[in-house]
Length: 65
Image 1 (cartoon, helix red, strand yellow):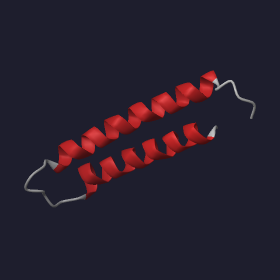
Image 2 (spheres, one colour; image 1 turned 30 degrees about the vertical axis):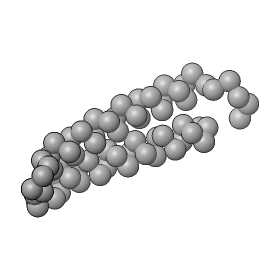
Image 3 (cartoon, one colour; image 1 turned 90 degrees about the vertical axis):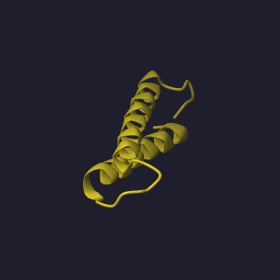
């Protein structure tokens, strides 16, 4: 994995994990935001970023490893 692809993958996995914690493991509510919706958005964005990172890694960057 290249440095940027690895960083993107780590960020994506972190976003998925934090989103899942917000959706399934936290029981408090914010007054100004829907916690479940924020968690779901974080998980979806994390999944999209993970797909992008995987796609970039499979294509290769053209640089020698």
